Amino acid sequence: GSVADVNFGFNNRGSIGDRIWVDSDGDQIQDGGEVNAGGSITVRLLDPNNANAEITSIVTTDGTYSFPNLLPGDYVVRVDTATLPAGFNLTTPNDRAVTVPVGDDTVANVDTADFGINSLGVIGDIVFYDANGDGIKQASEVGIDGVTVTLTPAVGPATSVVTSGGGSYTFTN
Image 1 (cartoon, rainbow, N blue to C red):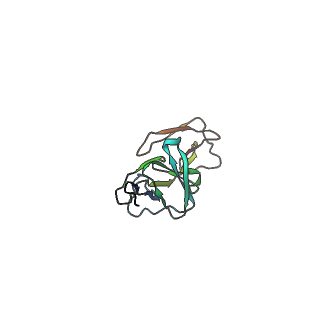
Image 2 (tube, rainbow, N blue to C red):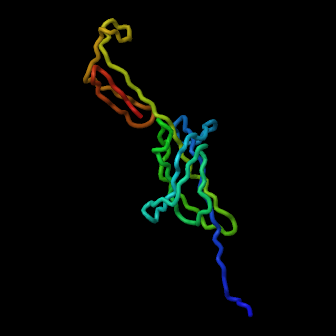
Image 3 (cartoon, one colour):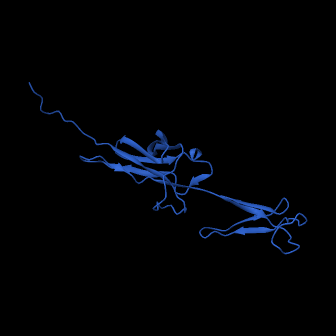
C-alpha cells in the first residue's frame, strides 16, 4: 500500500552578516575609502527571547562576519568591545536587533548589521602663567591649578575639566 496523507514542511534558512569597518570620520556611515577593521574581533549572536543568551560567536580577522543557516526569527548581534583593537571604540550602536524573515523558496540573507569603530584620542596639556608672553612654558613658569578648561566639539555637548597637579588637564575619548 501507499500513504497519501503525509505532509512535509520545509523551512528555508537564512544568514546574518556584514562587516566591521574603521569609521574614520566617526559619522556612523560607511563612506568610500573606509576600510574593514583588522584584528581578532568577536561578534556574538544572541537570542532576544531568552534574556539575550548567546547562541554562537565568531571571531573575524578581516572585518567581515556571517552567521549562516539560521531559522527565521529575531536575533541580536553584538560586538564584544573587549576584543576591539587597542584604543578603538564603537561609533555605531552595539546591540543590533535583526529579523531573519520567513522565506518561501529563497534564502533570507540579512546584511544590515554592520558596526563602525574609531580610535579615540586624548587632548591635554598644562595651563601656566606665561611670564614672558612667548606661548612656550619655561622651567621658571608655574602651572595654575583650579582653572576650568572646556572642550567644545563640533557635534555633541561641551565637556569641562579643572586643572590640577601643577596646571595639568586631560580630555579622554
